[in-house]
Length: 474
Image (cartoon, rainbow, N blue to C red; front, side):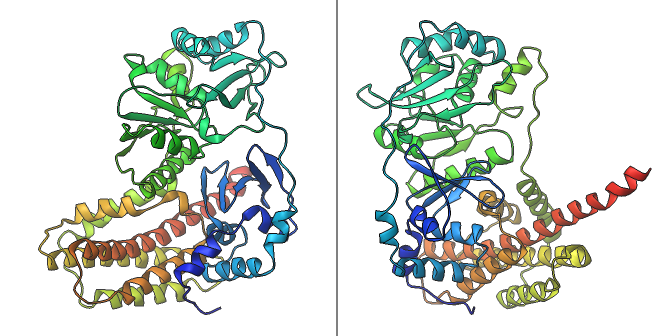
């Protein structure tokens, strides 16, 4: 289908589509989970949906309706919007009215008479500091349930009324169970609010307690929240309730999913007007693994994000290759021609190995071109900008949590961004507006580097698979 422009109103209408109702229109099955619905995709991955928003549990990524349809129905942007608008026209409201009713209201699990198993589990297996455990136990936000002896982490509202509870198994043989109590409200998940201007954000309560055990000095003056599955609701709620907080430290896991969660949460925060955001990573996979290492156990190592690591490598190479280069004449035309060449080169099915080297060479070349064009645009407004600064900006513009599509999708993104750059008015604009245009050019460069990354990683994967039979024969 040819590229079609939609009005902002139509795009917003499509993006606000109720995903639960849409999935039911498609004949999909969903299961209630608290205030959300759980749908399983074709790979049996758990996807939480609520209203027009979705969240991928394992990958810690999410978005709204258009992104959902693009990813899970394998459609380009244009077709995704058309599908959503068509579904709305097909009386989706009727499906919404027929949705199952709410399950039972929130209720805390019955408490056990003591907390011996919780203390033993958290101190002996998790190495959590006794004083930290005691603090939350005395605040009645941590206890042991009577039926299964789970550790229950309670989140209360501003009046001290429990609204959320997260259960974690204390079994030594099987500690994998974790889950939120039915009917709880995600914005009130396990937290501590102090008096300083800083909020620390964690994936799970255990991560939060481990971090506090590692950083005990004056810990109560700061604020902390465990998101319980990295949905952002509790973080945003605490920021809105506590306007004195103006610094957010995101402490998600040191692995690919945790790094993506950081970028996703940072983007959400910027959309809410919070820009003083930084990342703090554990030395090993998470904060409890750091505690284990301090107590003589072998910790689970950290994992870097493969696409983000490759993006940083490419930007380092870009600095070396373009430091003494000048912006080519008619750079924007060269970028458009570059897209056409790569699109033609990759229009040969899915055998990426055949053209991988050439795709990587050309996409890297056009990434350099975009960087030099941005540098020239800064010169036009009298701002000296080094290649190092622009390369760092390209790393900042890269969003690993959104870089999930295949090569065709990346090419489609590049085309859309090229069209946006080409359509930008040449009329006089403010300096801030012109800087936005420069970012649009850099974003095209990032798109070309995304193509490079995809081709490189696919090539590495295919080469690895080809070596397996020969290794087995040897």
